Image 1 (cartoon, helix red, strand yellow):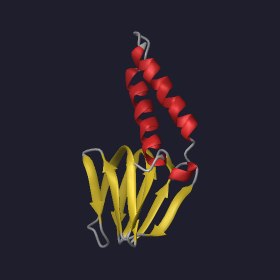
Image 2 (cartoon, rainbow, N blue to C red):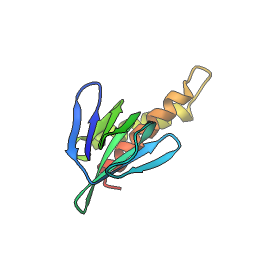
Image 3 (cartoon, rainbow, N blue to C red):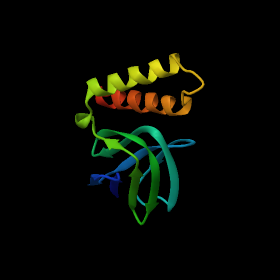
Length: 130
C-alpha cells in the first residue's frame, strides 16, 4: 500500500509499505494492505512503517489518518524522520517544558507545557532509536 505523511510545510514521506502502525488517540492502530476504509485522529507519538523486514520510525505531533483504496495518508501537525531531529534542541525543549511545569503558577498553561514535553520526549525517543 502507499503511505503518505504530509505536514503543512511539506510531504515528509510517500512510499510503498508492507504495513504501518500509527498512534491513534485511543491506542496504536496497525494497518495492513487492503484495510477497510477508515479515518482516525492521531496523538503525539511514533509512526512505524515496514518495508521488507525493516521498520522505520517517524515522530509525529498529532493529526489525522485516513485509509482508503490501499492508500494510507497521515496529515500531521509535525513529522520528522530520526535523522532530521536535532537532539540538542529536543533536549532543551524538554527541559524548558519540565521547568514550566515545576514552576507553574496560575498563569502557566499546564496543558500546553505538558504537550510540549510529550513532543520533545517523543522526538528524543525516535532520534535515539527507542
